[in-house]
Image 1 (tube, rainbow, N blue to C red):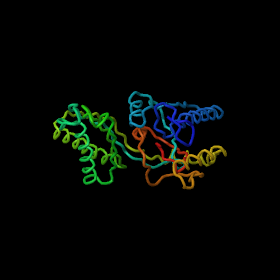
Image 2 (cartoon, one colour):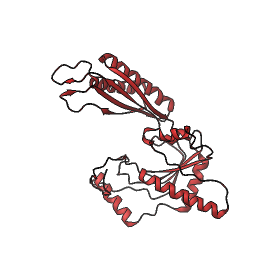
Image 3 (tube, one colour):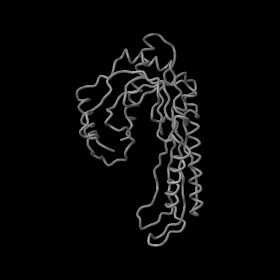
Image 4 (tube, rainbow, N blue to C red):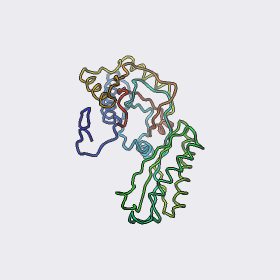
Length: 294
C-alpha cells in the first residue's frame, strides 16, 4: 500500500488494486443521501438502498449478493466508477470468464532432472493456451498470472497454480475460449504426469446497455456540471501524471458526455446483474497518463 503521494512511498501494508474503489464507496453513499433528501423534500415515495459490494475484481461479489437476494425488490441500480472520461454510459463492456488451474507434482532438488514437474506443466499450459487462443479464438483477450510457482530455482515446487481469464465483448466467445484453455491445461498436466485440478471462479457478461437510465443520468450530470476540481486536486493529478508518464502533458477530461456507441475495455460483475435489473452508470475522469490498476 502507498501513502497519498505521487511517488512510491510504501506504508508496509498489503496493497489494494488501485482502481478508485476508495472513491466509489464515498461517492455512491453521498449520492444516495442526496437522493433520499431530494425525495423527502419533493414528497416522493420509495426506498433508496446502498449496497456495499466486495470481490468485484474476481467477478463474484455482486453475483453472490444477487443470488442471496440482496437485490430483491430493487427496480433499478445506479453506480459509478473512475475512468478516463466523465459522463453517463449506455454501452457494453467486456464479458469475462475466470478460473484457476492447479498442477501437483513432486518437490525436488533443482540439480536433478525433475520428474512430475508441476511448474513445467503450468508453463506448458500457458504456452499452449496462448497458441490456441491466438489461432482459434481471434479477438479474445487471454490474461494469466502464476499465483504459485515456487520459491527459488534450486527447488522444484510441488505445486504450481495459474489463474486465467478470457475477455471478449461476446460472452459466448469468452466462454468458448475459456474451455479451450481448460483443455490445454488438462492436456499439459497429462503430458507431464502431474495431478490436475480446475477451480472455476466466476463469469460475467458485460453491461446490457440501458438508454433510459443513461439519458436520465446524463441530463442530471449536465445540470450538475463537470467535476469542480480544486487547484490542489489538479496539482496532485499533475504530479501523479508526471510520475507515471515523465515528459507527457496531462490529459484530463473536463466535460460531461453520453456514451452510447462503441464498448468499454473492462469487465464488471454488475454486468451480469444488469441483465436482470436495469442498471445505469456514470464515470468520473482520472488523467489518461495514470494507468488504472496502477
